Image 1 (tube, rainbow, N blue to C red):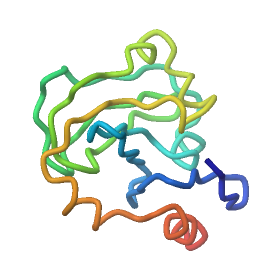
Image 2 (tube, helix red, strand yellow):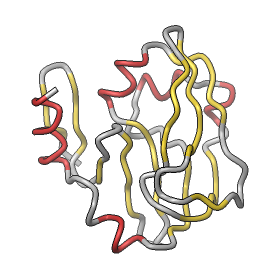
Image 3 (cartoon, rainbow, N blue to C red):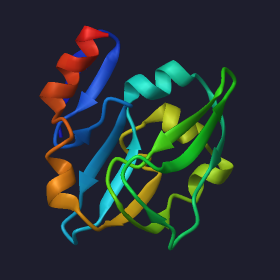
Image 4 (cartoon, rainbow, N blue to C red):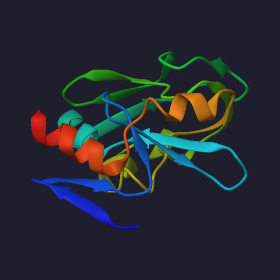
Length: 136
């Protein structure tokens, strides 16, 4: 996958993005991976703790997905799509800094989406997200 450079930030192509700086990757089995963008991790600073949701939890788009605690602040990550938590990236419990090292490889949650086709229409592709970052 290619990266689009926007100043000091990288935007990974092939993902969907929100204005709150979450990304969604659709997998071949129909599940989705969710994480935060390079912009988000740089704004947060060094992550010290990740509070992950319970597997099996049902989320509606816009619900709090998890909390990220950095040296600067505690920030909520919102569910960009609705669905059931299928898996969490347990590595982040002991090593939250993995998100700082590579926010696109180190996803936070895998979700079984319940309304993916409709909700993806409301998200931005990489090019649109890069343009959005340029406007900030």
